[in-house]
Image (tube, rainbow, N blue to C red; front, top):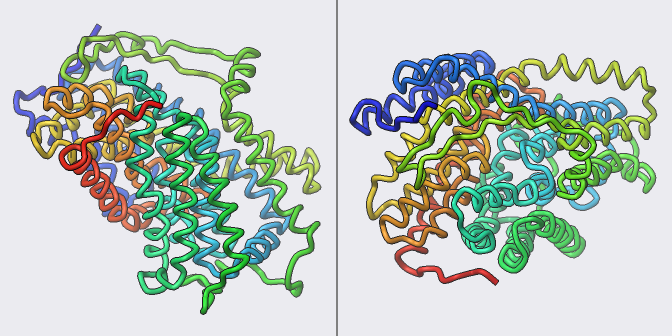
Length: 547
């Protein structure tokens, strides 16, 4: 048994400076020096291992097993999702279905701003709610590319849009995990997060279009933007408060898509924006002589994505997952790591051994549902078995570097988690006294930026948030919820999500440009969440939300 040490140098500031080195190496390599993502990830991993072993005293074998565990998690479930989403996209694109898809979305609105709003925000929230783990960014970025958006816009804007729904992603998994590690009431946590994120469900659609076309052109279409945001925020808040975390995004996204589509039947912008800013001729889909697709053509183009939505939703339900796991699943304790690392106070109330069990759930993994939907869609589109196999092998080749990058990114996150170096950064921010509600929110933001997951950030820092809040006399439910609410704004800058976006848009190697595009938006939105939490603590203290 090895116990974590959170201040190895006896000076929290110095320890925090050392702990942040792997993050600096990774982000600087990508964002400043334009190093290819898989090389940057390998550099970050080597640095993380060095810090864990030499600064934190983590046994070499333990650090190596943590890295291997993280790589395996990067490939399943995350890499498995990306591979199969790109497979589906390539099947549809090869048959020219995106041209029809573009025209069918154009029948809702030919304005590019509103197409972005419908696909990236409203539709993306459905995939976040049903699956999470990179699925919404992969799907919406690929769809935006098919609609003629340039790679930077498709990547960056899909990342910005995937914020407000993240805390309720994968049928509420982040909040279920948060309740488990903090011992706080699940319904109170869910309702509090719903209240914290409700304003941002309205703000993010406006922010999304502002990032796309600027303030003036965003204001030109403010009525449908408001409809999309409000029709998402109200059901999000109501379901979170009176039902629970499981169906928040699914219900809210369906209401938002329906309300937006209906509103656009009676409202049109005075000056439609039919061209995508900064799009080159090669970005634009080829236009055919047919003005509008027929009903059968439209149905054919949408069928692969409808099948995908159905399978993703089914694979996200606990009943289907349990049934598939009942057929076959392997839970593999990681030798040399499982329950051999002890997390100690003040990160947790009492010392406890950290589990390390790899869940080899090939049948119930979301990526498997996506693969089945792609196979069914392939047969529907007229592919033979041989053609499907050929396309799948080609897809593996296309995403090979992305899979390596994601594996290395998750290895970094797992090494910092099991060595305790990421907890050092959280403890540093926890020493901010009266400003803790603001910086505590940024702990969640930092956690997601480091781990790539709101669930992982909640597991990592949920206990710290409760303990620190109780020591400062702050409502622990508010601060635990703030960890998740602040974390959603870090989702757009975590390296894993950026690689997912670059892969989906066939823009691998340009991750630095994507990171620079989204970084300001991430930090600014996280800061706004922090200010809201400060208000909840000092200006309008929250009462119980449990129904």
